[in-house]
Image (cartoon, rainbow, N blue to C red; front, side, top):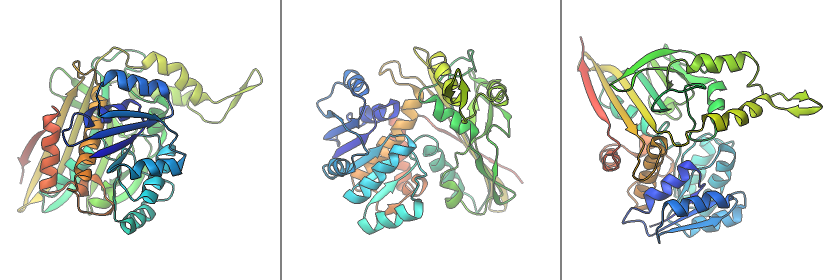
Length: 384
């Protein structure tokens, strides 16, 4: 199997490093415009299977050629660039797995074009959305009626430290966008939008993690279409206590506005300035991180209230020097690409991860995660 990965940032590099470990993968080509990032990858993972190429995904004819030489493509790109990769894979007629979802040409158009080409595109196949969606549907399928679905996911440093009790492992501007974009949730059976950072509540994990806080963010992705008839469904991001108040202070002070201000005659965008100043101060550096995930599904089964909880606490990998966020985002994507490249997923078109991995394929997918030491516990409870 030959795989091409577009993007060699934290996630793209981790995806490539996982792929080269597979006996079924013959070659992995990683493309990026940043030579330094590509060099960092080849120094971290010295494998004869790994090839790197300086390439701008916006050069779509060349992007399509790279895809045609591969069995499957992977997108580990920012939103604006990911669209070029999707357009190219539709032109090339090659299966594709993307970490994100929400392109300007819409899911209906992508689905129709992919089906016409006879290919499969799996969007939003990372940690959340991705694994969280797969677990949510796994729980929903065990109910006669699904009433509630609650996803809570977050990557945090092992210990809270100022400023913001947080450390970033990717673009801080992307994190800020998550905090400012309205979140789609289902409330009283209706899809609605609520401000991000609202719905604040305390969540407790087993020791040594303890108490954290969580709040609404726009992470349901395709679940709104795939799980119908629920009364309540939402996704919340987990952080150490106090983080939300600190972010709200930045917002109230106007420091996250996007309208330029003139300072000494020069236009300055407050959000870009804050992101630049804080990025160096809150980058993870040599600190260790951990990833928390909890998926609660509740409903009725055989006339009784039934609840299923999936939970995961994942840690930094000191042996391979991989952050937990890189592991937990990259591994689901890598596994999906390998299963897709091996012809195990028969569905064509735009196929959400929770639909692509059902039944035996879901069991296999989760076993592959377990082999990578991503351990998910399951707890079931019954009521009246």
